[in-house]
Image (cartoon, rainbow, N blue to C red; front, side, top):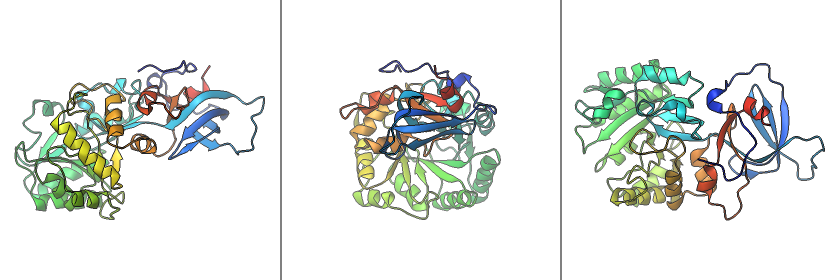
Length: 365
């Protein structure tokens, strides 16, 4: 991942502390920034509290003393589906990721990484909750993660409570009827209701005919993958894309993970998933950039193939940035040394991003 132009020297976020209590407030000019839409030029304020950006007034003229850094700031990039237990967490900031959602792993191990400044900001689900003998309990890689098999409502509620107590802010369930038994409807609904009562989203791996619909009807907030084992009906996709108070965020969402189907080579599963995602996005559904990092031959960081697949499925321009970026600036941002032109390939341009903290931007030379 190399920049198209030489940026100012920026210390590595993976080796710098996020906490510098005595740093002064610094302001500088930047060419542009994006926060839901494009703005620029702008003034960036840096302090130990983080990064904030304010667009310049149209009539404002830069002062001779104004410090300027060329390029663009975006909110940090989040991969909404990773498995840190199957990859190298400390390589991900250098790969362009400011934040990740771990959707299945040992909660004790994940809690340790959550407190580690050399890894991206972390939200996690903890153990997979599945039926006895259900996916992924029989997969070799599951031994490196954590699987909780439940056969009753009571066991399911205890499993959710255990993950929350360990620090989970979401709950992951597996509904893979192609690879073993799945949770029945009563247990599924109970998991969703109890998780919601604890303030946790529910994320589901859905695989097999009818499983995406089951998850949606039960109130699952997010699909961990774009459905790929069946072409969903237009009516179901339209319902999934609507604003709906059953979901904690006010609506249902999908994580993309298109590139795991062929790793750039395409194929039937890739085409089905891309078609489903294109129609879901076209109907107004919320799409989140995610790769299933740790699963197969995926880059340690931002994945241009995933970005390109999203773009080819119609998730382009501002929609692509919304799927990828954190909702606001804060402790970190993504710095890009150039401003994209109208004909810039957005996927290539995004690969030039560097994760930076406020203290690191202060020390740009």
